[in-house]
Length: 236
Image 1 (cartoon, helix red, strand yellow):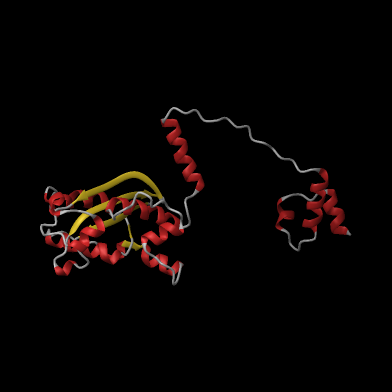
Image 2: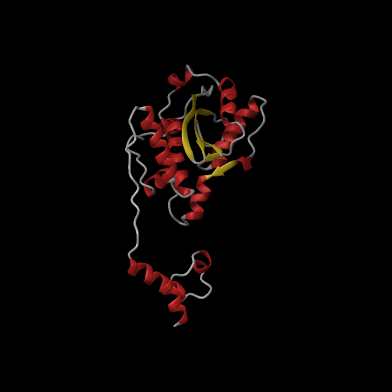
């Protein structure tokens, strides 16, 4: 199952007022595990940067003037997205901006139903609690130390970690598989371990059999032949 976690930075809050996308960050997940594949692009908005927006993400007119306009990055973005579900915090905001940009290029819109809104999911899971990305990172103890300003790629990476917690947390088996692959790539030999077989004592076997014999219609008795102790307990 492939999903793409997506975030944007913009010049303002409403594309209908002429505000534009200035940064796009995407992180690929497969079976809820980051693959390491990303898409990242700064975009020339072809308009001045308002002070309020600059204070959020720190992107200046001079910096963005040297970046490509949206039509140049659109093809690479759409190729990266493919047909994957899009994991977005406050999906209506980002999808609205991207669809405005795609519309200017004469390209098809992203369907609203394609987005998984983590803001909505967090509000359903934690009614009345703060549900901003920062608040969720603090809730799940995700490190925010190097996030002084908003950035699309950084926020997408943080959101990926939050999303994995919202859907049930990282699966240890998957994380161990990733760690094993990394160790193998680094030339680290795996540590050989001999499995330890733990055998119950005779008294523990008898106690268990006696307990099971008292259970009505115990499935255990259909799967495992009763011991002499269990037979005697059933007759008693």
